[in-house]
Length: 267
Image (cartoon, rainbow, N blue to C red; front, side):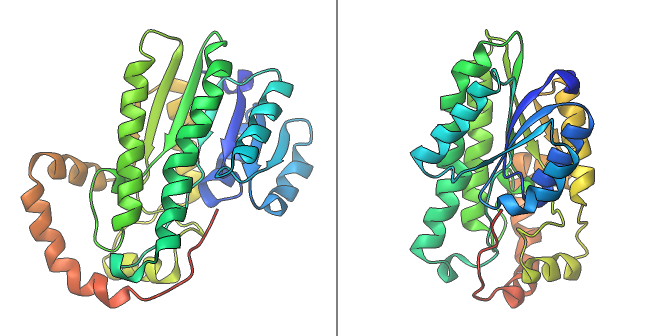
């Protein structure tokens, strides 16, 4: 897809990856509907690109919020790129998470994404070519201690992306699933970042992730997994999960030492 021809609905636009995506899309000439529950975070970008960036303050967990996005897309004259980047995360053991936090992750990461995509499909299918991009995670392929609920949501998003791509195979709408590894965003707590440091895990910058996502959109790819050796671990987990089980068991004492009750970062 040519970015200058794109009319984009971008969710999670005030988050780390989302904000970087919004900036790079606007710089490339795309028209962007930036959806966020924190519109103030987009003020500077909106001032830089007043002709290209339109803000849609909406809570995608509500029917009213999704309807507001759909109406904004119609007023734009339709869209040919839906970029689902909204999400919430929490690093904690399952027994440390309460009912509300579980419901919030499922509601935003899975239910809202599926419902918004369903609502947008008629607009997308009316275009000569269109794309749905779902931003998942390496943890959508590898179940990791301390992220049980988050992994569940990203496994679901990966399965949804695969099934929807096959469901739309005879249409002009493609589905791209993107799996970043650890990224330096506000969605990650200080404990999560400290764990990454203790394990010597690589952490990408949002700008770099956004550049690779946009490159995959331009190439009309189906999947994009970011980072090495994370790509290798995903393959190993698919073929030899017992091997990964044993490796992660050795990390358990370190992982547990960084888990404690904390507030859920949002984007």
